[in-house]
Image (cartoon, rainbow, N blue to C red):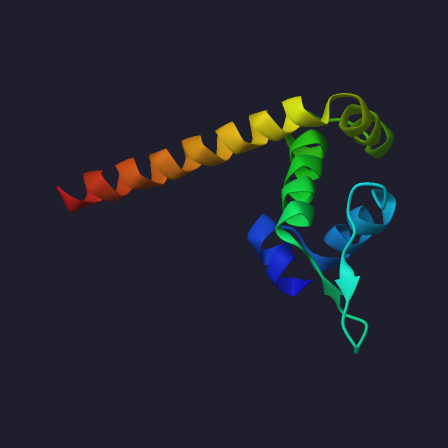
Length: 98
């Protein structure tokens, strides 16, 4: 849970809440201690939820509806933004190296 929250830049309680609210889309397994173990697909969905809530300004219900109706479009946008952020980080590293 903590690793996923850190990856997203969110607090663990927000990720836990999203995981419970979007249970139709996010299916973490639990270990013997009861800790949530997220699969890569779950992490991708959490990134989509974060994008819809934080960047698009949707409500929780609006984000759930968007994921139900147009999951692939949201996925493409999130992946494109991630790639652009990676490219920017590489360009900044090159600039700092000059």
